[in-house]
Image 1 (tube, rainbow, N blue to C red):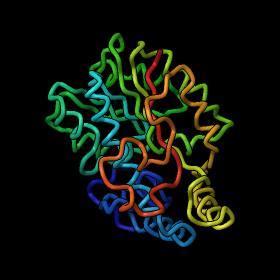
Image 2 (spheres, rainbow, N blue to C red):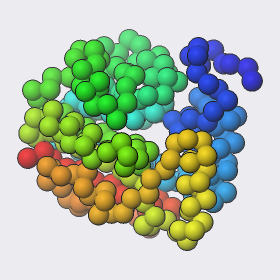
Image 3 (spheres, helix red, strand yellow):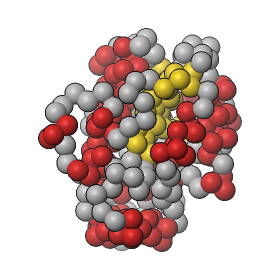
Image 4 (cartoon, rainbow, N blue to C red):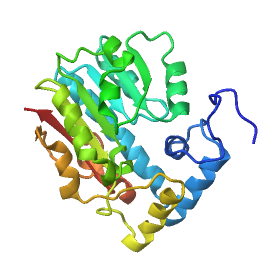
Length: 270
């Protein structure tokens, strides 16, 4: 397989990547045939995966605008993936030209592409780090350069927590990040769940199996389990709901049924 110019040296281009599969679902071009093949296999069981990803991105944009409206213009986006059109820094800086953003991912392609996209933007940066190691994120040079942790920060955990197995204690990681941020900080979460998916669980398990096969297990948690990530935060109305229901700016009747898969919510640190 020929390595494209944008692919960093040393990465394994024979193994599918969650970030690059996500890029493919959204119609991006920074993915390989191995990623597209894995995405096609996942879509055999859940053909609406691109609609879910679009709903996820739409929620992210609404949540970012909400944060800026609430006076929070610093963003820590963990598990950010490959920046595509309408990403956090574009939405935030359009609403507030002083907004600052740090993207964090452990996929070197996502980080390399992020740095290329952000070249010339001195109020945004991309860091190579892992949600499972919060201290590395908080101690990164990118966070130190861009974010003032004495002022409220919007922590974005969008479509990332369902890739952290319980064995790595994602609740503890989220709590450690929460404790490092001052009161008034916000958290925005989306998370996959069997609840709301318009096919039987047995069929959705086929997609779960695809992600397990590529060594990126997809953990489908219940609404109650997802709500635990908001401990220490007060939920913002309308609470933890299907993604299109969170402060919708379009008619919900126009939404594809797949868009209502999983949950989204925003909380404010007490």
